[in-house]
Length: 239
Image (cartoon, rainbow, N blue to C red; front, side, top):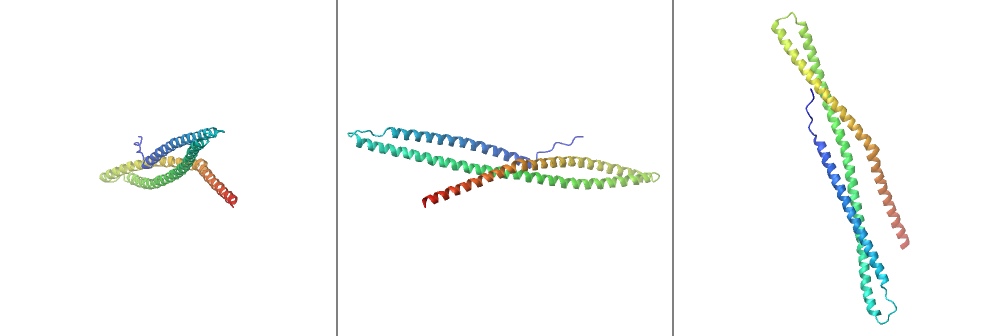
C-alpha cells in the first residue's frame, strides 16, 4: 500500500516565491543596465561628435565676420560643454544605479542562501523529532502486542469468554503495531531524504555559495581600498 501523496510544504512555496522574485529582479536589473549602457554610449558619442564639430568650426582669418563668429562659436561651445556635462552626470548616475542594484542583488542572494540552509535544518529537526516520537510509540505498541500474545498463549485452557477477549485485544494491538511500523517506515524514509537534502545544501553552500560571497566581499574591500588610495593621492597633489 503506497502512502498518500504529500502536500506541498509552506517552506517550499516560500522558496519558490523567493526564486521567482529573484529571477524577476535579475531580469529587470539586466534590462535597466542595458538601457543605461545604451544611454551612456549615445551621450558619449553625441558629446564627441559635437565637440569635434565645434573644433572643426573654429574661425579662420576672416576679419569681417570674426565678432559674429566668435559669439556663435561661444554659444555652440557652451552647448557642447553642457551636453558633455550632462553625459558625465548620466554616466555617474548609471554607475551609481548599477552599484546599488548590485549590492541589493548580492544582499538578497546571500539572504536567500542562508534562509534555504536554515529552512533545511529546521525541517530536518522537525522530521527527526517526529521520527523519535513515532519510534517510541511503535516500541510501546510492540511491547503491548507481545504481552497480549503471551497472555493469549498462556490462556489456551482458560474460559472461552476470557480467551475470546484476549484474542480480540491481541488482534487490535497487532493492527496498531503494524500501523505504527508503517508510519515509522514512512517517517524514516522522509528523515533520510531530508538528511540527504541537508547534506546537499551544506556541500553546495561551502563549495559554491560561500566562496562566491567571500569573493564579492574581497572585491568590495579592494574597491574601497583603491578609492581611499585615489583620494589620498589627490589630497597630496592638492597640498
